[in-house]
Length: 142
Image 1 (spheres, rainbow, N blue to C red):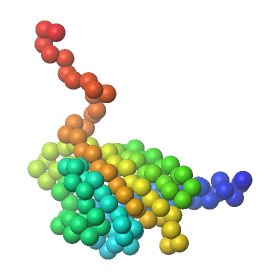
Image 2 (image 1 turned 30 degrees about the horizontal axis):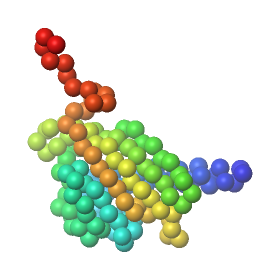
Image 3 (image 1 turned 60 degrees about the vertical axis):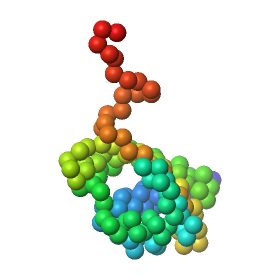
Image 4 (image 1 turned 135 degrees about the vertical axis):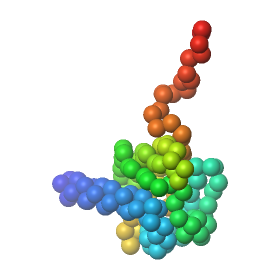
């Protein structure tokens, strides 16, 4: 039981590090990092709804980021045996100075070579402060 907990803690630390490296690779257009840390059948659902496979994702990565700055905030790692979910929120500043937030989920699989991302989904929002579930600003006079 203790050895299992220690393994889970070290896996947690590895996944936290991989998450930071994933973001760093995005910001630095580091195609080689992704080539090594994504499974061959990796797929991502981008914030615009497009679905990219690994070669398409690598090609997109090579173009460089569409943001000037990206700061991770909340990161949550859930390990479910040989699969892990990494969910996070990040604040970004676009090339035009526009600010927003993104929320994403990366799915990792534990392989013989270590943890590798098999899938990701990214959602971007313009407002850095979420207003809450299904809430809209009140209309004047309502």
